[in-house]
Length: 252
Length: 252
DNA sequence: CACAGTCTGTGCGGTATCGTACATAACTTA
DNA sequence: TAAGTTATGTACGATACCGCACAGACTGTG
Image 1 (spheres, rainbow over the protein chains, first blue to last red):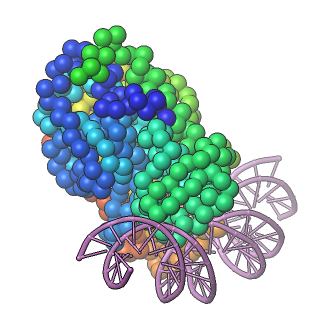
Image 2: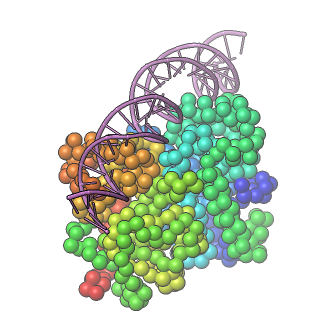
Image 3: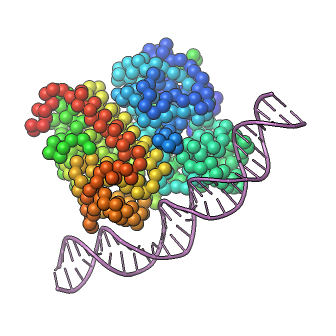
């Protein structure tokens, strides 16, 4: 969605958009960590110890109902940050953050994050900007759950995920997708079968390949385009506020 | 939900929780306005000219799909503020804000709001705290749309609305409720009929009376309790950070 | 008071999704 | 290679909700 694959490695767009001096202050606190598939960054109710800036990982924000049913509320890739409630002033969060696609990211301790945020400089400004986009994504997710078919939602989900990955090869079981969309696994099997018959995707046990993005877009609801547009706009705002020397970070 | 009716008049909890000096700075910019039923504070894509702090009004945040179908994403009462994207740094919003229950509120021009927010004092802190609670509400709304029946959602909606009103008398047509929950009007008619048969509510053309809150809670999904708890917690945090002299505002 | 407009009640067939059960296929490990 | 595990395919009745149509009831207005 955002950049070409090669640029994405070890790179989080929010971080790279920071002012140079601010990034230099943060750098000693940023720890490059593995974010393996399925690992839980935080649970509903947890007191956050860190914030995370994904680079190649994709994280799913989910709400878990009392009966254990899950619902994905939003996804976070290398355009964003996890643990926003840290600086929103709340001690806990209502959702679970679980790694949907394994990869890497930067981790920072809660205290350091909060301190920098409260300086009210670019980290704050960019984080708030990001949260606005996140809210848009959540809005569309809710509307999509209400009004669109499983097949449409699957198309939206595949497109968004492929955008985050900047790849057409997803490592993902139908069971997992179903749990994120909050539907039965069989529903995904059927929808995926249709998409395969249409020639828009291909898949084998645990792997999905997007063959025809525009095909998926025609079957998808408007939700994908709206969210994509919001994130594109976010990234271009990042870019326009990026200090000319911020590439110092990339060299690291 | 939050206080007794008499205390609610002309009062917004976020405003009253501000530091005294900050409130004094804001006061000249706060304009008490009518917020009549059905009026649209902003549309999706609008550039915001104001922020609003409801006192007796309730505002519904909705996403409007391309085909005109609507979905309520969250509600805002006298615990919150409308127009958050103003200070999130985005120029526009993705949702529509429409007055669901007529009443009053304070309005403030975008510039004044932004200026005070950027002082990074209590208005910023409280607004972010509020947004965190709003995000929780949006999360639960999405999960509820996915997993719960119309009847459960109606119970949730009635309880939340009654809490905002601090009253058991809602002026509301089934058609309007249906459009907010994004379902058919007939679905609401049927669910409301069940609740009436159970003795939990009563209604006549355009009016609904909640007779048995705990009854509704038993039929409601967990979503109501979770949201209520979040807002209760928000208000108690407001209260604990309120300056002892803030009642100066109430005297106005 | 009559009438128009709006709100609510009801019925009925259609459809998407669910819940369940079980079969088959693809990987993994011994 | 065999066994075990996990992923995917398929089927079928149940059900919640939809779309539509229309009737009846309430309310405000001339």
